[in-house]
Length: 268
Image (cartoon, rainbow, N blue to C red):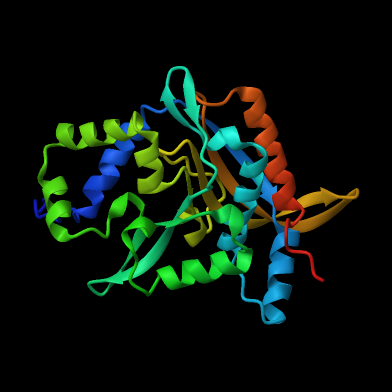
């Protein structure tokens, strides 16, 4: 049977243009990529027990708080490069996460900035993420100010690609503005929506980025016994321009220990 030659033509939503620009600039960042596998059996069990006791905290909120706590001990990992000799290390640890919101009858991912995570509890972060899915957001809460009026958004989307990327290059030399627009850390959990036994390596314009993959069950040796455990595949991006390899290794090791030991989830 001969090919029909038929096809469908679908237009990109305008929001995808910003995503393409982020990838174009992110590919020029000197990120070191760490692909790690973490035993989250204890953490998931403790979160489940908290929920049963009436404390509805989420795994994502706990991960955000755990990352924030680790960054407090290794503050250079979320620094922006101001020039070849200067780093800007912000006191506030602002982390961008992706939240799903209704738009035109469909659920679309929206970048949302959780400000001052170092000052917030797991419960507060959980509530903030849940609220972000439904309530109207202020401009300083939405990454890259995607909530600004349609006029400015349409102007940006109508610009040629090289002009739009010049805007992003400006943020590369203006760390204060970059921090205000998108925070210094991004945590995305796209891989947790489907069971994939592996890692996805994302691209980011942030100094520090995390990509959470699937949580899968697999056998592991615990105290010389084989047990079925739950493992999280996590990708970590660290900007080698602002921090050296030794600090990177120590940061990842500390974060891994916090996650595997259920940091902050102790049952009182």
